[in-house]
Amino acid sequence: MPVDNAFTAFGLRKTLLPAHNFGQPTRATGILNQFKLPGEPVEMSKLVIVVHYHELWLKGGNRRFFLSKLHMALKRALEGLPVERILRPGDRLLVEFGEGVAAQEAVARIERVFGVAFYAVARVVPRGSDDDLAALGRAAWEEIRGEKFKTFAVRAKRSDKSFPSRTIDIDVSVGQYLVDQLRASGRDARVNLNDPELTCRIEIPPGPSLLVFARKIPGAGGLPPNTAGRMTCLLSGGFDSAVAAHKMMKRGAHLNFVHFWGGGARPGESSVHVARELVKRLVPWQFSAKLYLVAFEPVQREIVSRAPEKFRILLYRRMMLRIAERVARSNRALGLITGDSLAQVASQTLHNMAAVGAAVRMPLYRPLAGDDKIEIMDAARKIGTHEISAEPFHDCCPIFLPRNPALHATVEELDHAENTLDIEALIRQAIDAMAIERYRYAGGQVEKVESFKSATA
Image (cartoon, rainbow, N blue to C red; front, top):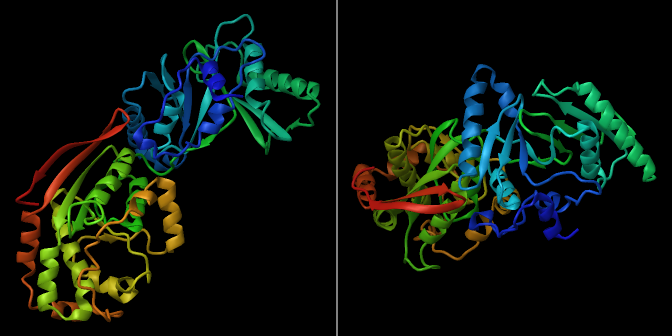
């Protein structure tokens, strides 16, 4: 069925997805395109999305806090769209939209809300007809007729107890209607209540509408944004650190970013433009972020002039951690994040990571430590950062590369190599020249709302 017809069935207009859609079809696009004009009149002029969560059930007495954060995240993600209300009947949320909403835009935004296990675009059946159960049966048939399955079940939830039919009556009535339709179509499918291949779900919420859906769309998973505390991520222009950031954001952490740059300011010469684009790509997952831009070449030149050559890269990294730690403490962050992957490069051997990490007291998280490059690249493609990191840019770390870098440095060796450096002065110098940019995601768009120089962290 053509896309235009599918959207006509909703009574919705078709719009282009905004820039934050990453230029890729959403996982819900195929399901939206599968909505068919019903053979019998079933009203579909209203868009309702059923949102389910999973991990939040494990939170016990804190469940209310996490659910309120998920509710808030959905509200912020859908800002600018005509949302009529967000209901919370039991173990799911129902997002009801008004007229004129773009269905693909709505699902594209929900797709990037952490805490959502899966969601579904529901068929809306007007309540109060001569035979609500018959109307539900017709809607259920339109929902499942295009699916391939050999066993199925019907599961109704009646959060509005004023609805005259019990859930068992709804299950039996709609299930029998589906069996009759399947047989009439010559299909060999039967009811299996224990382990069905397909489950047709019916929601009876308060209000004038009944809901039917069978196709679940995987959500972002994880925990709702801003539930775990603040962290600071050392963001390079490469693939690894953006993926590491996304992993920690998925666990509810709110991140600010520190980027160390060197070289020119035009594309291909500096990494600043890549860092900015990566932050813009990541901000929709947590709604706001600060990007700290640190000119690192002066620090590197001081290290080159005073420290042993084989330790250069490791001393670069220790200074980066110290500067990032100073920034993190100014933001009351509880930890630092890097994109280190064990033994991926010379500076990321187990010995070197331990020696580098000893430079700071703040907890240091390396969520990619056990991932290989192929896994990291696949994750970058999935979250939409791969094409950004693949752009040419001038990374500051390879400046003045040692010919034979140390592979098994110790804390004592690096401490001794830094004896000739004024560590505090170098930190202060970098922070005094640092630029800060603030980004915000609102109304489906990412915007830079502020940019300024900082004399203090």
